[in-house]
Each structure stands twice: as structure tokens, then as C-alpha cells.
Image 1 (tube, one colour):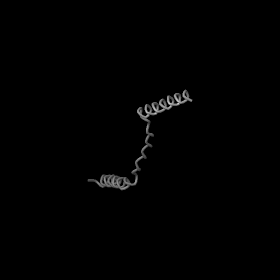
Image 2: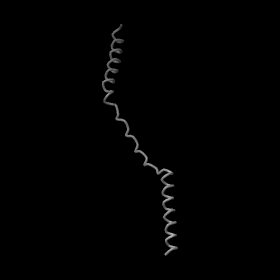
Image 3: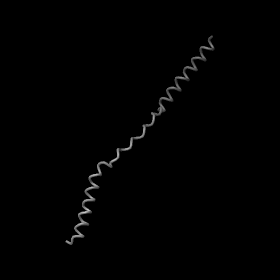
Length: 67
């Protein structure tokens, strides 16, 4: 192998080794995960609240009539 080609090969190998030596330092931390969405009320919760409010309004009407 001629001396110029040896120098080119040595320079290429040195560049690869230098790049690999710096690689762990260039690793970025993973991006933080987005905040989870707040829990949404279930349809069962809406139905239960509606029933409770309806029962209360019916009870109030009955009491209002008696009084």
C-alpha cells in the first residue's frame, strides 16, 4: 500500500474512532412525556347526578304542596 493511501486510511479510522468516542456525550435525554389528560366523567356519573337532582326536585315540590 502506498504511503498516501495509508495516511488516508489512518485518518478515516481516526475520524471514526473520534466520532464514536463523542457519541455517548451527544445522546439527548428523552423528551418528557406529555401530561396526562384529566379524567372525564362517565355517562353513569351524569345519569346518577341527574337522577339525584330529579328526586330532590320532586321531593321539594311535594313538600311545597303540603306546606
